[in-house]
Image (cartoon, rainbow, N blue to C red; front, top):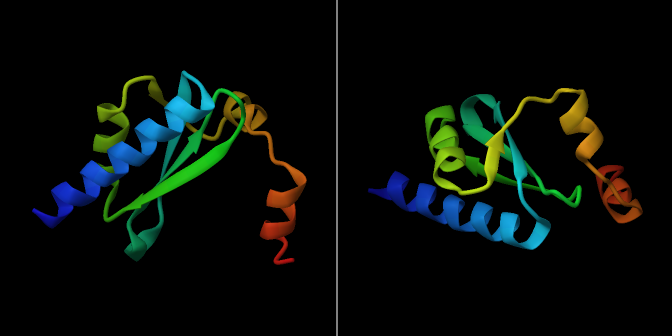
Length: 95
């Protein structure tokens, strides 16, 4: 039951991301070990977002449930689609 709620919240978050950042959006599912799985979202405008779930199966279920969200890998095209701004770069650098 709790996992269903997590998946439902993640679907809601990913759906809102797609609506805000254009379609089709890309999703890369990453296994992050004991922490579960991360779905990295890349909007059509190059924005990034993510949702974290307890396991890869849940993450894949979220991707399948969201219209206009396409499963991808970190290939050349997906990497090139990401547009990282100065604020994000500073945040990643810990500044």
